[in-house]
Length: 149
Image 1 (cartoon, rainbow, N blue to C red):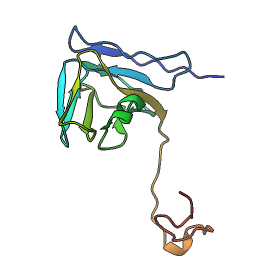
Image 2: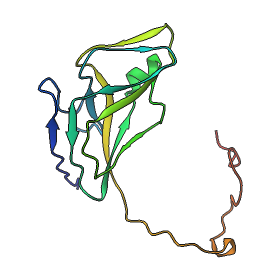
Image 3: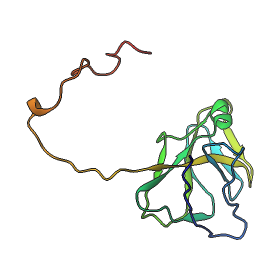
């Protein structure tokens, strides 16, 4: 059974578009550019959406790249942007152009990212001695040590 989550959104600009799903079972909600934007090659900019929201305590919003833009060379330099439950400012998409061409043009109203919602557990940090950590087969093996690509 799917649980439901109600997220109130406010338009900070009357031309802003509320997030939409591309299909009934899509995990992400599409975010739209509030204004036309040019992203110079190698530059990182913040694209406004004109929206703010109130994510409930115990949840986070994750801004992720749309695969169609990533395929062209638009990336999110921080991988996944996190929106904390207590943030009430404008949602903006941090984007970098690494594709071919000197600049990338984003049209007003274009879908620029996806917003996913995920639960955030309450975590308690406890300091212990290293020998109190449970052991694993991997142990101290770092990057690439698992042999998986």
